Picture 1 (cartoon, rainbow, N blue to C red):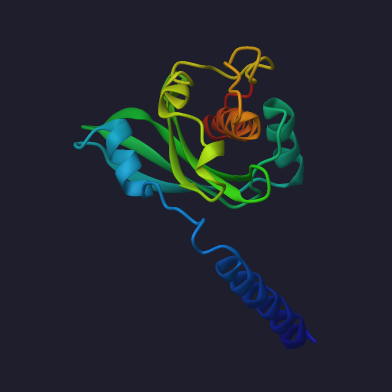
Picture 2: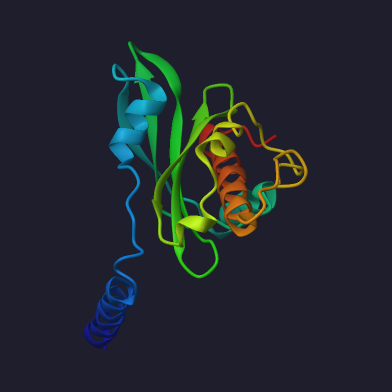
Length: 186
């Protein structure tokens, strides 16, 4: 029975990958690799150590409440950035559906639990829905807040409203997850 269940799961994953890859190959666009984004955000001399956060159901729910957004479930891989034994921050990767297709961002959180930078890694929607990089740059310095939303603490973007909402949710999720990872829930 276990073999049959695994076979069904693997078959479903294969079908999903084929559908994903064949749906709109021209629209899939890698903007930047994770490693390039990490180096740009934290500097060339930084070292990155991958870590894994294992959240149970209650912890996942707590992070979602803090973020006012759902994010990835356990396990969650994040990267700790250091330079000469000094903590620079942590980086989280989040993928969300913008309109009908996914976008992936790297959210870098500083040691003081504020946004250092948000970098777009992949965007599969039409380019018209892509917020300008200067809008992403304005997220630097933000901290977790209920008002961290487009039209409130974040500027709204005409024509890219759904992208702005998705990226703001990614930022809130990363900041909330950072609270969990650092053991500082308040």
